[in-house]
Length: 193
Ligand SMILES: CCCCCCCCCC(=O)SCCNC(=O)CCNC(=O)[C@H](O)C(C)(C)COP(=O)(O)OP(=O)(O)OC[C@H]1O[C@@H](n2cnc3c(N)ncnc32)[C@H](O)[C@@H]1OP(=O)(O)O
Image (cartoon, rainbow, N blue to C red; front, side):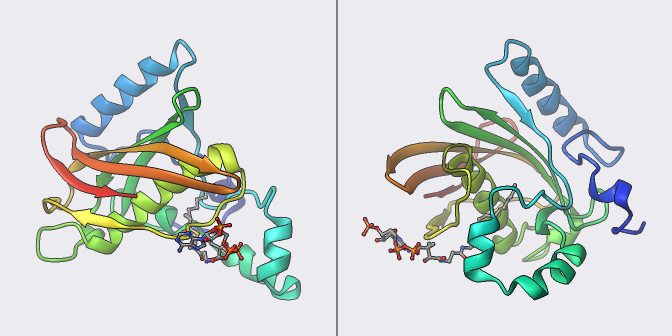
């Protein structure tokens, strides 16, 4: 399927699709229920996010003349896979508690060691989830430092839950912790700050 149709670029991918497992669907329904009283909010997710708010950052880091051509071809990394092959995920935020939860089913194209999730893929979704947690407050944020402990390998194509929590804010610095647990919550796979 072409990635560059207007429709495709503006499509919200943070919704169920036929590649989702029963486990991911159940978690999605659980969190959608939590959204009913307004304490949690599902975050839409697109292949290309509007540049809104990043213009001064882009001016500082990027050559404006190259920007237009570049961004027209650009896709958010975590949304640049065919359905089911990469990151199938939905983020939910609870701004009162300064938390972001990400439910994730990792596809077969995220393999590292045979049968296992690639460590870089785990880093990526931690970076995105913890980044979103900081972004809810800081609006435009960049990851300055990411420390990760891989406690248990994550089986490929399994469903996991990421929990990001803002721990502290000092001016424009945000300190976020993030864990990755198995879908049933019993196994702590990864912890990061
Ligand atoms: C809508 C959905 C979008 C989803 C997107 C998901 C993407 C997730 C986010 C990313 O992956 S961003 C891409 C990876 N990150 C980068 O490319 C950032 C590259 N680094 C930088 O641009 C600069 O180093 C940075 C902006 C982080 C800081 O540089 P600045 O010149 O703005 O500030 P400065 O170096 O003076 O540091 C500011 C404060 O941060 C502190 N700091 C900087 N780097 C640090 C570090 N590595 N560890 C701890 N503290 C650090 C620094 O000590 C200082 O603290 P104090 O003011 O208290 O002294």
